[in-house]
Length: 177
Image (cartoon, rainbow, N blue to C red):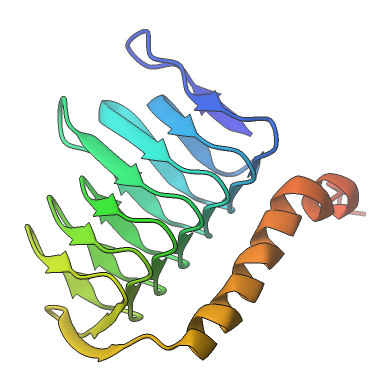
């Protein structure tokens, strides 16, 4: 894993979390237990603070950043899909951010809210708990169902298992022949 001190700020990562070698975690960052930080992820606490709750998955090539002296906060059991950008926003517990989505400055995504693939949650926009939002800019299109929650609880457990066990035991770097 690539952890970097910046301006006397050192990332804090609970040991149950997995951070891929090609991911960068810089400065004022706090990562809870059971988190999965995928290949190519960039979590930059150089200007502001980044807090990521337990059992959250930050998938491949995500960028997370905060404004100077401010905070980007991501709750517990959150899924941030491949290639997403989260900038100075608040993402509540159990939320799902689809692949290549953008959640911009001062936006808030409620508990169990779903942001569709490629969606843009613009500055100061709020997505209420349990709602599904899609489009550019984000528009609420539906409520999540009990079946949807059940399905996603299963997917979220897969990433916790990757972080706590599978990658530690089965991922092995090899040299080319």
